[in-house]
Amino acid sequence: MAWITKPSATMKVPKRAEPYLGAELKDRLTREILPRYEHKQGALIPVLHAVQHVWGWLPWQALEEVASFLELTPAQVWDTASFYEEFWLQPKGAHVIAVCRSVACEICDHKQITDACRAKLGIEPGETTDDGKFTLVELECLGLCEGAPACLVDERMHLSATPESITRAIDDLRDKPGHGHAAPH
Image 1: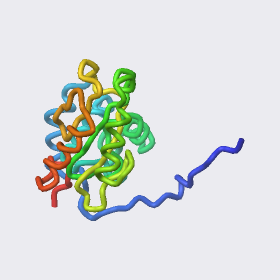
Image 2: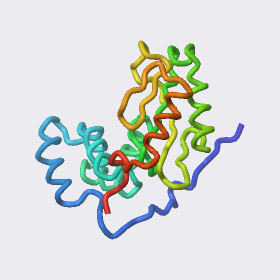
Image 3: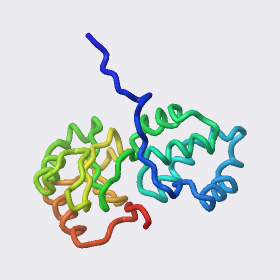
């Protein structure tokens, strides 16, 4: 079987004039996060969280800037960011619906919850609605097994979710502003 290759050596990273790690953010990271680590490279995950908190996701340019800031290679930063489900490497909707697919939730038929979200939003897991309002994801485990099937709607837990309860939660959010996921202007 042949390996599928990507032209990463010739990939063009979209750049904007303004950096994602501006002077203010770098200063805050230097004061608040770096002192907690013996080596600045050890701060990679908290730095990625901080950048994502500001911008809502981690654009390629931001990953390169983090690599430079922490004296790592872009590949090291990308490997870390792409490994963990909590990092967003694509823009996400104003509201995130996360359905747990752990063993407990699978036994309690999490698929009916995902299917209700698919039908309501017209998207598949990993996609965002055309209006940018909702992103649907499935996560490996939310740690809410006692309330399976479990979901997070933005950052609010929904335990013992049903297709009806999740579609109501979506309806409740339809006209509300996002939960801070949109990038600042």
